[in-house]
Length: 82
Image 1 (tube, one colour):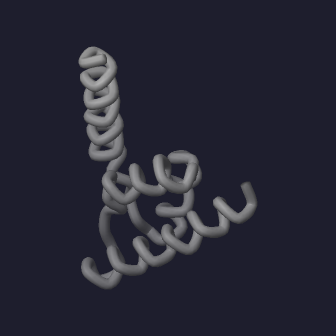
Image 2 (cartoon, helix red, strand yellow):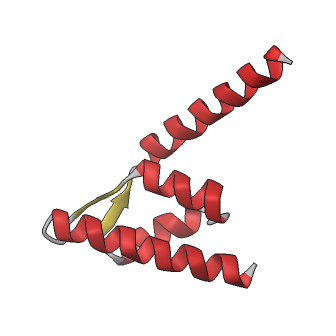
């Protein structure tokens, strides 16, 4: 778990710095990036939100939740096809 968390922290930092650079130090941490951290790295969404705040970023929760709903729909559709 520790290695996964460390990898998530590295990815988060890169993503946050990119957002800050593109938006002059102020902006929104994308829901798609939060989704990637959650699904690929097991990075808790509440931790992503707290860390985004430390970078003076706002987490796009709506975008994250839309992406999660889309993933759920894809999973349900695949299950129905079986």
